[in-house]
Length: 616
Image (cartoon, rainbow, N blue to C red; front, side, top):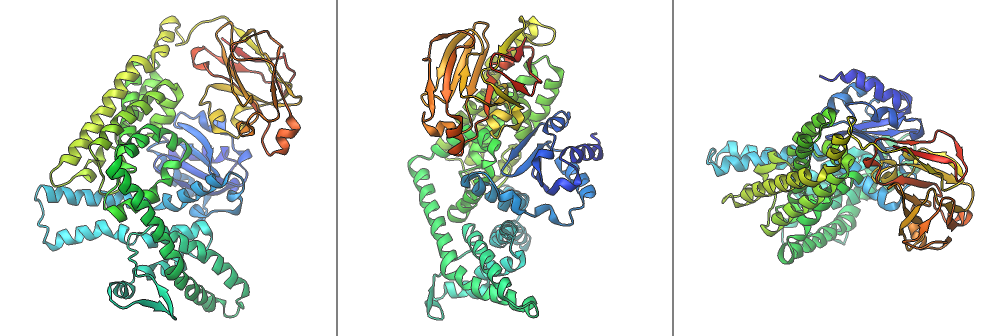
């Protein structure tokens, strides 16, 4: 058994100490830190722990991926850090930086992350009730059945209040006032007015007769509005009467606005989503499960999978069933399991074998991140196979119109949420699981670890034995550790091992003799292959593809032979920086998995032509 206290001690030390932690929460597989200064964290030291599957900085969070043991580690951390209830606090510093899309997605994640366990638990109670009903184990007219149904439905019926509470944490407003204002939407008196024949008005202003039970968008919009109202009220209310006058005014202002403006606006958004789902369900029901089955690994990498939760809950509220997350993610997670088991069977690396078995088992039960970060993404080929097999199994899910009737983790334990009276839906889910497991297992066994096994047969270290080759620096400038690059595709070594240079002149030179394999039309990146078979990508700046070739000039064409020190690209450093783009340049060995080792210079500064990388 892991020593959770020791793990917590080590992680706290290497995120910069207790004083550097603003908040820490956990999901099913990872710790999510909000740090005062992310530069104080030692990412490499944490990643070196055997119990850690990976480390990511995303959406303002420093995330440590652990797996099933994460609640135990979080508990030990909380004992030491003693945040005093700040585990859900969001600090102003966290909102700085990042695109507006990332801020929106991060905000959605922060709002929904705390309620996912209770939604999943309530969903499984619904599934239990369905089992009792199908097998006639409980009389549906009995008070016991009614009570269990109430246990299951309470979280969904009062979902607006839960969302108001977590939204208030996000928007830094009173969660208790937010809960009360939102409770008005589902108060029996208002429900009675909605069900009546008379028009509803508030001082002559019309109030739409809408039911808000299980609603998702309205409570978030209302709480957002409350955050601004509360700031103004608190600013101008005298301190002597603020304790009662401020909340009274906030409720009296926010509640009518919620009923007249923001509630109906949220309802319109929900109606639009209903028509979108209705179109796909009637005209192209295979599209959503195929897309989710294929791209779930990428959504998980970026945290976007949590951003789909409000849409999924809206589906349940409007249609009574879900097709967005459950079927496609079931296909993807079981594909992760199949690929992991194939790696475990094929590899001779005992550490990878043990990790793959553990990660594959977790994926079967719907926890895919250990498999994603520890196995398939690390080996790269299996990740592509997982996406293919997830799409194939997702196609079956779409063509057979698979649906979930409650929220649950997408694994074999979720089968009860597919139960209907004729059991055809759960049968289709079982077939989906079998397709995902078999396709991913077979493809990974045949193609996903082929190079790994070739290397193991050639060398006792499990890698190819080749002569040592040096790669010269293509730029002059300061050397930057790749983990510090503000783009996770590079910093997480997703494309291969690499290093970065902060250039101090405007030219990219050939780092070896070879050929130009790829030259991007936007001229910002180039792919080279050396005569020794080393594949290298040089990416000038971050997000510079958006410049569409402006400020770049090339001296070669795709397919050209090159000699070391040939000029390849000229770029305008000053102009790129003035347009708001980072000029740091990643240099990636894209086939680094084919070599025994790839070492990088330890020099802080390089001149073009100096040795930058050693490959063996």
